[in-house]
Length: 492
Image 1 (spheres, rainbow, N blue to C red):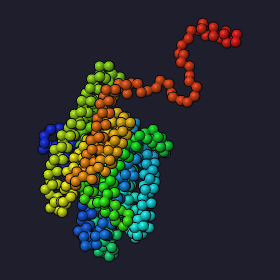
Image 2 (image 1 turned 90 degrees about the horizontal axis):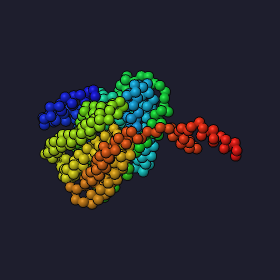
Image 3 (image 1 turned 30 degrees about the vertical axis):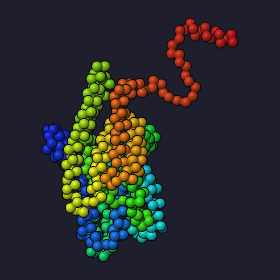
Image 4 (image 1 turned 60 degrees about the vertical axis):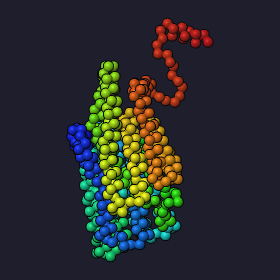
């Protein structure tokens, strides 16, 4: 793996606590930089433009619009990402680079269409029932659609391991956003929340354009094979279900608390619970480095063992197949244990930093009461996601669906239960759901290890499947018997 994977591998190979921390901060800078850039941009605009002087209702309207824009643009992209990633990875492996552009266009059409179906009815409700100005509603919708395009294009650059370019594009876009908002307010005397929202829209559009230009720089030829992409959705529909359920599970505990008496309703349209949402955000950032550290280590270490096993299956001896299989699953266990060990150190460090530092910036009270339990939940959640990645390696799509379904169901029911408990236990639903999902994923991986030979050697078909009359099961017959059967048929 180029780029971040190689650098992280060099950092982690010394196997010390210091190098683990250095690797953590490097992965955070590379992977979380886009989100940090957006957060810093919003905070700077608030300070430069006098956002805090506005009345509470208008400030919450802007905040909720931005929150919904991010949450639902991620959710609407989730059904398509896994299948598109699979298709693009397969085409790169087979060196059919001209098929990647059709994949981009088909996925873009599906993503935009689905996002419109979700976004337009909400915007109509916001305008008609909420009484929000039509210009603000339209600006919010534009931000939602442009961010959808940004996240969609990020998928392709991420597969190409171009994380640094993604961070660079977000940096350029957010600098442009700050400058534009200042010009709108102090140059054109525009209303502050309108200026901030429209400037954010323009920044997202710029990021999307830069990402698309980078993508076209990589892949210029177009084979025109659009139907092949749609066939992948039919073939790997379980990937759509698994990835969507996992994405819903990331937010379903928030949705449960949005439906309680503790919720806050803005403009009769937006529903949120600020304390719980902020605690969720902090908890996620505490553990988000786990995903990139794991993926990097898997592609640098486990992938070699997986490749060696695959090569042994193709042309090796029986003992070679057995030995490479044992080494592969040993490496799998080591990677999961290494992820837990590294992320535990990082999470504990960040936990104490958040507990000590954040109250000085006004993030105390209920936010810090909810945060510890959620931090534990996200820690287990990212370990569970690592197990799902291994399920994808072994094409255990049924296991991935069951893992995600168990995760989202237990998280939903557990959050309903925890909403009735004291504040410190509000995140218990996420802990229960993540642990249940991890248990299912671990069981499926052990099942794969036990039955891998059956999965590899007995899943194929000698004859092509079809619908119709069953062919004869006779494979050989003597000529004399055939002649006797012919004589019998003539007599009949």
